Image (cartoon, rainbow, N blue to C red; front, side, top):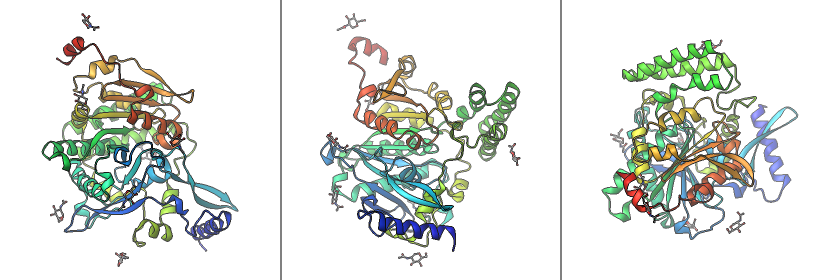
Length: 451
Ligand SMILES: *[C@@H]1O[C@H](CO)[C@@H](O)[C@H](O)[C@H]1NC(C)=O
Ligand SMILES: *[C@@H]1O[C@H](CO)[C@@H](O)[C@H](O)[C@H]1NC(C)=O
Ligand SMILES: *[C@@H]1O[C@H](CO)[C@@H](O)[C@H](O)[C@H]1NC(C)=O
Ligand SMILES: *[C@@H]1O[C@H](CO)[C@@H](O)[C@H](O)[C@H]1NC(C)=O
Ligand SMILES: *[C@@H]1O[C@H](CO)[C@@H](O)[C@H](O)[C@H]1NC(C)=O
Ligand SMILES: *[C@@H]1O[C@H](CO)[C@@H](O)[C@H](O)[C@H]1NC(C)=O
Ligand SMILES: *[C@@H]1O[C@H](CO)[C@@H](O)[C@H](O)[C@H]1NC(C)=O
């Protein structure tokens, strides 16, 4: 018998016999999403985006005012089920070993981002996770097409239930979603101006964690970052800088595909030089255990419970989608963030221990933002951020832009710092604690600032 099947059977047995609250599913009944299924993005081809939705656990506001967070995974090509079951969802996979067999189980996550907000995970773009791309040609190859499909999906989702209509919406995501989040945010705001109020998407903020947004300025930071972490010496720093410059010049020449390859070479070289188990978190002794999510979701009973055709094989990251976005990878969406910060709230956060897209990498483009508030933002005092008395990180904020450093976290911040990431998202959305609004300023000076 193969290990996976054995593991599943034992797990199944364990669930049925360990506690009466578990249904006879590998999925404890109360862990099921409030809703899950498909949002068709093309009626001709039936291509569709898969979603899971978890209503807020604790309604602290009337439903019509309870924020809805939308989460997008990065990659490009990785499934938001990673966010759902490994990072910020209300139930997460974990493994244990008994008699040399790995057992995958779901455990409640009290630090879920749906404690007081609704939480929607979208497998984006089509072809990712459980989403369906009718043909490979239909998979988006640029951010405009990614946004086109996401917009249709979000509109359809809102129509599923009257209660969704007026709720404040926040679009959040990680890593390559540093491209998707601005792209869909931009699309929504551009559409909103042309629509009557009742047809608008009530977008009030966007959130990017360890994001790739302006790759040309970001790829230039790896060598210095690794050097100051003490991971490479001066000579290696020079070697890495040469590779970085190559990626930059290729991108500047519009040789996008080669530029993406050159960036991969920078990261592979850094990996080879340091032999870190993973560049996603310099403190980890082994890579993040994403495969647990795939093991869990490839269970036939789990697929049935989620409304997925059991013939679909779940992959955490799709190579086909990654390839489709190969030429897009080094292209910037910084101008979209510049538009968003003028019209809505923006939160950028990074786990400090990420060598791929961390703090220095984000600062490199933030300080070059074209926004009337950027000087004020850069001048603002960096506040020490505490959660329940413990040091959680640092926050820099001016008006619509907040930037958070999350200590003791790598690329997957909600996985590494569940409590602090929950406190961050709740306080930022509700404008509490370190995210409270700046005091009303002296109006006359304020007028000059804006000029
Ligand atoms: C739907 O698919 C058809 C056929 O591939 C294509 O012509 C059309 O542009 C697609 N529509 C959207 C909204 O993607
Ligand atoms: C739910 O919200 C109420 C009111 O804010 C609070 O007192 C209670 O502790 C919350 N419960 C949970 C499980 O968060
Ligand atoms: C709409 O959402 C509310 C709150 O989540 C829920 O109580 C209700 O059953 C939903 N209605 C439908 C048709 O799904
Ligand atoms: C990194 O090391 C592997 C294994 O030795 C090798 O195959 C690969 O070419 C190296 N990559 C780079 C960019 O140096
Ligand atoms: C599942 O997918 C297979 C293969 O595409 C198809 O033949 C079958 O009808 C589908 N089942 C359901 C219930 O949709
Ligand atoms: C911040 O966003 C609001 C809209 O929510 C906008 O009216 C305001 O001008 C923005 N502020 C700055 C400084 O860009
Ligand atoms: C606002 O600032 C101006 C210029 O610095 C100053 O003259 C004025 O007294 C201030 N007003 C208040 C209410 O603080």
